[in-house]
Amino acid sequence: MRDRFGAVLMTSMSVLFVEAVIGAIALFVWDLAAESPSAPYNTLGLFFLIVLAPILAAVGAVLGYLLSVAVVMPLLVLAGWFGRRYSGREPWWWVPALTAAATALPFPAVVALTEFGLLACLGGWLATTVGLAATALVARRLLLPDRPRLSAGVMFSRVAWYGALAVVVAGLLAGIGLYAGIGYEPPQLSMERVAGTWADDKDGTLTLTADGSAMADRVETSDYGDSLEPVVHRCTGIGSWEYVPGVAGPRSQTVVVSIPECPMDPWEVLGTPGHPKLYVYVGDPDSWDLYILQRRA
Image 1 (cartoon, rainbow, N blue to C red):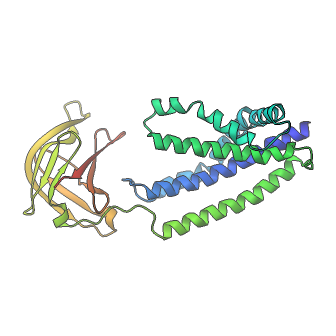
Image 2: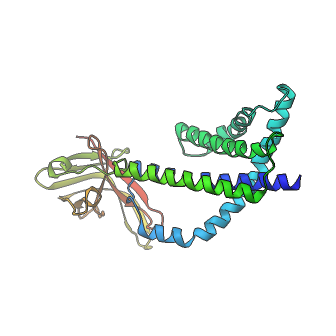
Image 3: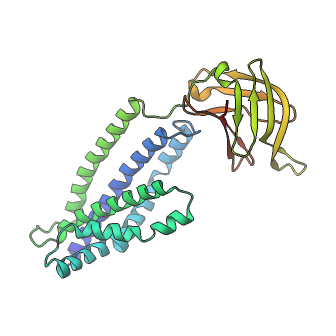
């Protein structure tokens, strides 16, 4: 019994680790494909990720153990009991059914207490359900009476082999997708496309005319007050502007607005070709707030 428990535990932890790696690849691609002000990659961030890899692996092992003992193995016990009680046997579909029910319990609280939208929460629920159900189904094979008993070491080597293959395939598919151009790039603007009125969602506007004049009306800016702390306020004034195309692609283009009453950093570009946006960061440098203007006319 102890050997079977160890094999189930090792299988569950190994499958969860493989799923976490594949999920990280999927999230990385999703982040690159979504509209985001961040650069497509961050060299410093990758360096710290490599340095912290052993710590992350140790934390992942602990989380995998806790999930296996507290969630996956109880699901297997409940699925077996419900199967014998209501089906006279142990059909596999009790595992995903109970997993979906268990992961749905905290769903209303997640929707109510977080800023994620309903679709994002549904996607998280579905991904969690599939991940836990797949792990439980793989481990379930060790508990079937017609299956040979395998040791924890054998199961670890099998999951490691097939898991490595799955990770390689996921990485190749991600690379192919990024090479095909699914990564997000802001639209390339020009002097003509920048000229016009840009507005936020609080009645603030920035009007840039074709002759290089700029007029801000209640545009958010930040500077340092008497206490040397950054202060965000609404600013109105008149000045000038220029468009800097940049030399490293759409992410390097900026719109420089010079208004004496309204100190502001160069605006960068977001959005799509049909709906471009300008953005800057305002507030405390340790916790910037993203301030976005959308093209109105």
